[in-house]
Picture 1 (tube, rainbow over the protein chains, first blue to last red):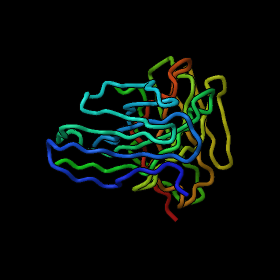
Picture 2 (tube, rainbow over the protein chains, first blue to last red):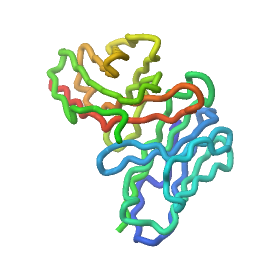
Picture 3 (cartoon, rainbow over the protein chains, first blue to last red):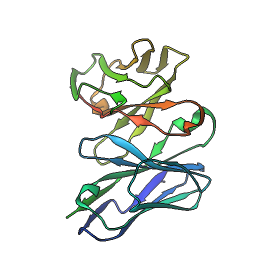
Picture 4 (spheres, chains in turn brown, red):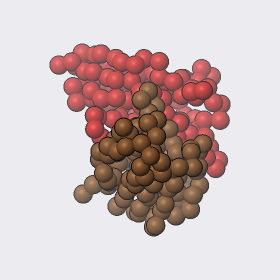
Length: 115
Length: 114
């Protein structure tokens, strides 16, 4: 059973389109994250939700909107896609309290290519 | 402004020898450090971590050393195995209410030759 899963794995789309990436975890964690890995390979945090509440919101264009329907799901919706949005997007999850939160478990990534 | 840096993009090691991966940081507020391993087309996998109250943490073949005064940490893999070939990311977190915000380095590609 996959602990953290993301769909789709690959996404190729045109500039200006709107797309969504879904993430689900079956680890019973209460905190979930979205990271972006850019062309320089840096992994940068975008958002984090704890118990469906937004707790980390980095400097990300407001075209990106996360939604957490429940503790096990964190989706990422992107409006008006731009060329610079092309990247690998990783979802992750962890326990939300104490030192355990720092061991985050990552999904396999969604490779987004904007043409 | 990269607060966590891995200055070696790649490292090549013979099987059975020691692999040493290095990481430097600039933010004095970081108090917890982690190493992640990543295979192609997969997400990063947590490997080992260390709190700033320690200077060494060991887990099997993997040992992480922390030098707070130098703001430097390293991951030692002994002995190295071909299956260790992957990208290794160093990550750091602040204490208090940073609540899961990890800052990653850009990774080092480790290749272990049989």
